[in-house]
Image 1 (cartoon, one colour):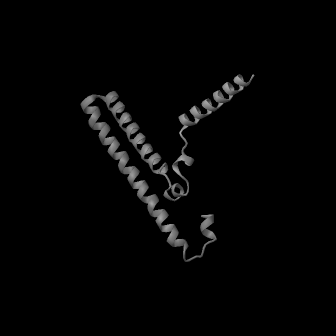
Image 2 (cartoon, rainbow, N blue to C red):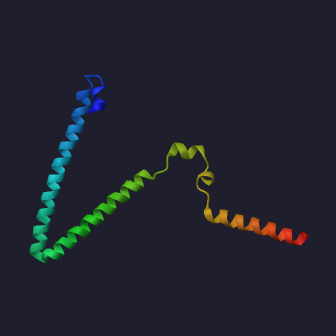
Image 3 (cartoon, rainbow, N blue to C red):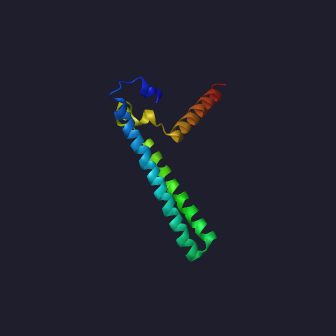
Length: 118
């Protein structure tokens, strides 16, 4: 709210209403999600028992959270097209195995070259 206090008074309601609307929508969505979870538990506990119903709901939520986390990381790890055009793929992503092989060959070559000269 302190950031909004320094803005022009005519712009403050334009910024405040979307934030309040998003908060209200989130609250209603969480309430609906809670009722759906309760209904799912009641139905599964009547059919399978309380322990198995709790286990299935927990596994389902864990899989859902993992999928959402995977989508989040996929979106955040997409390469930036503008940044990729400035540098070549070899410069930005060197192959670690080829780098290790080159280094080993270089060191061994210098060692063998030094032993012949002695």
